[in-house]
Length: 184
Image: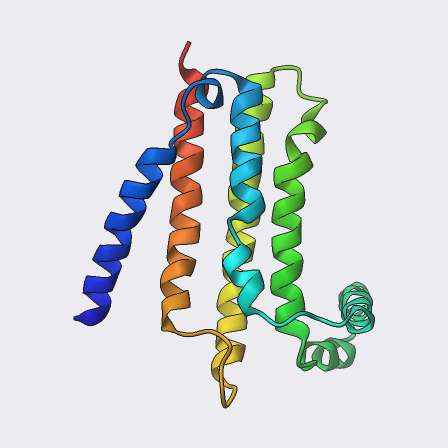
C-alpha cells in the first residue's frame, strides 16, 4: 500500500514538474532547439544512477572492457565467466551503457549526415536514444540483481521507482519532441 501511494505521489510530482518544463518556443519550433533540448535533458537524466553506483578503477575498467570484448570475439566461455565474475563487472557495464547513451545524445544526430531528410534524421536520432536508454535500463536491472546479493546493497527500493521514471520520462520527452517536429 505504501509503495502504491509513493508511486502515485511520484507520478503526480513528475507530471506537475515536467509540465512546467515541456519543450516550448524554440525548443519546440526549431529542429536545433529540439536537439538542444534533448541533449540538455539527456546529459543529466542518469545522474542519480552514477551517484549511487560504485566507480570502476581505470585499470580495472580497461581490463574488463578488453577481456569482455576478447572473450566474446573468441567465444571463450572460461574467459567470459572470469570477467563476468569480476566484482566491478556490473558497475562497469551499467556505467558504459550510460556513457554510450550520453554520447548518442551529444553526437548522435550529427552522425546521421548520410540521411538527406533532416526530419527523418531527427526521428531516427530519437529512436536511437530510446534504444540506448533501454540498454541502460537493462543493465540497471542486472546491476540491481547483483547489488541485492551484497550484505549492504548500494541501491534501495526508492531507486527502483527512479528507474521506472527514467525510462518513462524519456519516452514522454521524446514523444513531445516528435509531436513538436510535426508542427509547422
